[in-house]
Amino acid sequence: MDSKLEKRFTSVLGVRSRADLFNECFRFAQDLGFSRVTASVIVDVGPGETRWACVDNMPEAFEPIGGNKEICRIDPVAQHCKASSRPIIWDQSTYVLAGLADKWEQQAPYGYEAGIAQAFHMPRRNHFLFGVHRVGALPTELKESCRLVADLSLFAAQVQEVALAVLLPDINDAAHECMLTRRELECLHWTMEGKTAW
Amino acid sequence: MSLRIDDRFKAILGATDRETLLTEVLRFTRHLGFTTVNATAVHDQPLDDVQFAWVSNTPSAYAQLADDVLYAKGDPVAQHCRHRGVPIVWDQSTYATAGHGARWEAQAQFGYCTGIALALHMPRGQHFFIGVDRDQRLPSDGEELSRLTADLQLFAAHAQEAALRILLPQVIELACPELTVRELECLRWTMEGKSAWEVGRILSISEQTAVRHLNNATKKLDCVNKHHAIVKAMRFGLIS
Image 1 (cartoon, rainbow over the protein chains, first blue to last red):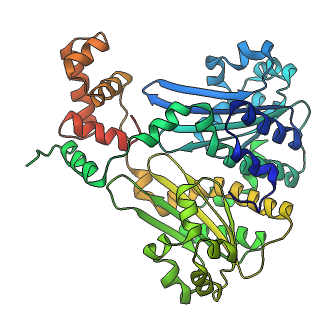
Image 2: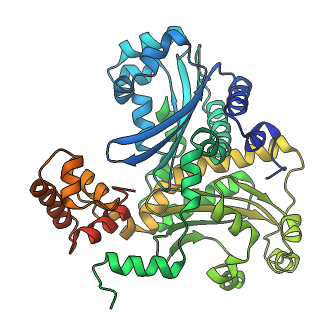
Image 3: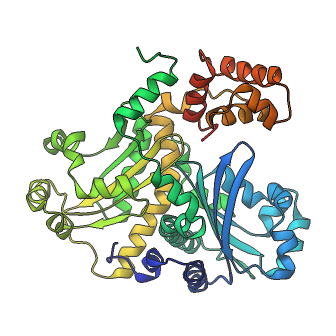
């Protein structure tokens, strides 16, 4: 654990429970000036089949829209994060440009007017998505918005280290359980390339 | 709005050759207050040789040592980055604690006294490493140090795309054939040890149809049998 960085970035590395994970994420979002937060892990376990778990503070009344996977599929922020590991800073104009001004109108009253999000696409078909959202405009200064995005990026990198173990522990354990020796792997590898034992 | 952030990284996002990549990586490094940089793209598939390709401004006198992959294996910063997805901020104490004080002494003469490094671990065996170094101390102020590290993290998210594309084009260009959902399902159940008959029962299709899907997948993947196809599909990240 690196103690040289500020604790506001690194304390999340010590969390072991969902509640603590949420508290750390929420505290960070608030410090950054955002009132809503979402941290999700997504694991593709097979074709068209995913395991998904998250901590967030989505208002209950917004869940039918915010938790709807069909709606998420057209969301420009979700789409960006699905395809890219670069962070996105978004507001009403992002939705207007995507021809989805209505969708923004729907979510804005629940505290999702503007935000920053970033996805991490990792080995073993694991993905991590972190987003903060708020009411009110984002800074117009490029320097200031870069500061927010860089901070989010650094924090998200810390959260992704612990999120899978906390949110989907069975998948995390399974990934560490199945260890074969190099020789065993080599034999399986050549067998799979179509070779006989001979 | 997102475009504005991308504007700041426009040059690196649009880089198409090593020279531009190095220029942009150097520009960022100096802006951050560091002297040397190494940005490495790695491709690491099970049982294949690991491929490394990088741009750096490592002084030639130190390059022979620094670019030795075996030597890097004992480096605590490289080891951290190999296993972790969080950045490491390092100085002499990092090496002393790891029992590599002499190693630090050797590199310090070339200006590698302190630094920040991180790795991004991505699907399909792709990794990106970036480390910036200098001969001065790191800021003692945690806030300032966190700001530098956050900037590096953000830069890395933008630089990795260009680095992989430019440094390991053969890895990115591996054409990934498109398989249908049914073909993928058949491969996946076969991977679980099911026979074609069993796959047919599970997916409510005939054994013959299951065999057809598996044959099609095998052909599309240019393989000799269904097990070979599974290996290749896994390498492409189509199944896991």
